[in-house]
Image (cartoon, rainbow, N blue to C red; front, side):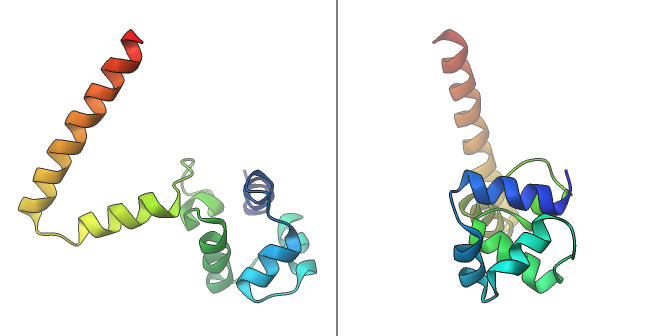
Length: 109
């Protein structure tokens, strides 16, 4: 999917109008439509503002990732990466155990 398609899809899924998104990023509404139709490409700075306003990663909007990470998840991962390696390992061990347990519960539910 191209940037414009992902922008349109995400914006509609989050029920945000072009006008509202434009206000959130400090732009005019017509430019959002032009981005969605792939008539023009936003600058990296504007694309970042759009991703932040929609609460998704820039990687998702640009097609570098097919996983639509929400901003909260990205913030948690960023916080984790800023910790000491030993602390990261303890946290990841706990998270992996919780994920394993959740998968097991869903299998038997």
